[in-house]
Image (cartoon, rainbow over all chains, first blue to last red; front, side, top):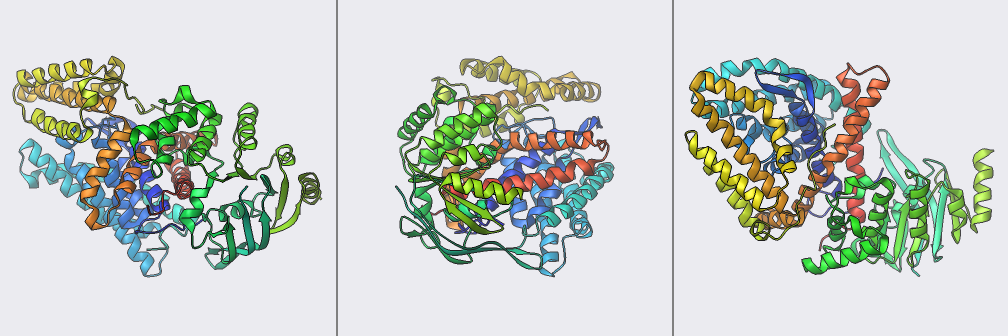
Length: 194
Length: 231
Length: 204
């Protein structure tokens, strides 16, 4: 019911707050363990759930900004990456490709949600799933690129090898889709202006 | 003392199918030092006070503070009107106590050292001087609310709007916050469910179902509210 | 819930505190890239020793360093074992020492730089983007807001998880994550209102 009447240049203070708070949400999702053990030494967190959710709830622009801000906050040393680790180390490690792909994933999911809204559709679980599947492909391919560069292995082989992560990612995507649809039912105005 | 004028103000909010009226035809001229707004949850009292700094826009009618129209002079009005929310966690923006107060001063004081000095002075006044460098999240709820008030007072407003500032606090913290608010020299526009606190103000508005149903001296207004709420 | 090491600035007047933030950040980035490029067991170890010396000189408490390193320990042990087995111990030492060096440097940077200074540095970087319609002050504010929102969002997560547990729903991620997301959005709206009330959405 409250409106911020202070829109001057694009984003209102509510938009800024949504971007900042969702950057924090992705951070929290990244450091809480979804499972108490890791898979192949990689801890299983809700990080990707947070990334999908940011795009699905905020749309492409704010979703992209929120995830990019999350990366920037981590880069200056706040431990917000899986581990939890902060600073530039994660950007120098083999998983850097995944980090770089995250804002793009949020963007892709957000675009799907925005297209649905523009077509007069409600943001349903199915809508988020469609965008999320494309996002997951982006995450997979860009992530594999990072690993291939770091460990000096052929790209195609890396893509095939990293397919093992896809099922777990899809579980997080389904979760994010269900949750995002509920959020849009609770806050129908979230994407109203765009 | 500042003057807050509401002239035939109606506020609506869009819903999935049409719109809903949150506040209907409110007219009031508030010049008293402490004005309190009481009413049930969802009655429209938060909407009423949010009009005063433009957080909520009127669908029709005008809202003026010291003659400045909120709709056209929003920034100037917000420099005069400070706002304290129920949930202190939502309004503390910076990681440490001193930095949060300094943020309020960013626009008024360009020099960083002077900004810090001013912020420290404000903290000393409110009794948080020794917590200047601690994380805002290490403070108790009451201290966080005092800090929020410090952030507001740092901007030297002429009006302070407080929307249920003591609702989430324990007895001792609520006392500290309410004494601080009542002793300010600024005009106070307060929303509260604490009827004892309401009785200590100079004028009271009762909001029921989006309308101001009573505008009187606090004793009589509170009696009216209690009777209509419990009948 | 593990609390994130925020607000852990160490007041002081060492050369590391006095370095201009922008240059310090640039230095951190360059050092990070340089350290990653180091080969063999000895140079990374030397870099780690140097980083520790800097941290010590800057007065960073051992506790802060441990806090940064502790979460990595298990991972580092696993990686070290794997690398020793597959590529020999020099590579293992290189990887571990490099990672620790970066953590120590980042921790030192955080400890010696007030967030306000960091904000000013971000503003300077954002100023370059002004022709693209970027408002540097708002960038800085959003940045800082994200950092200070982490403990709040962490609390929301803990609370919703406990609520789900109280209703016997702890095995349903949906019962935790849906109210968590909804409350996070509600919190963001409250923050947006508070920012507007403080005049932070108004033009200068």
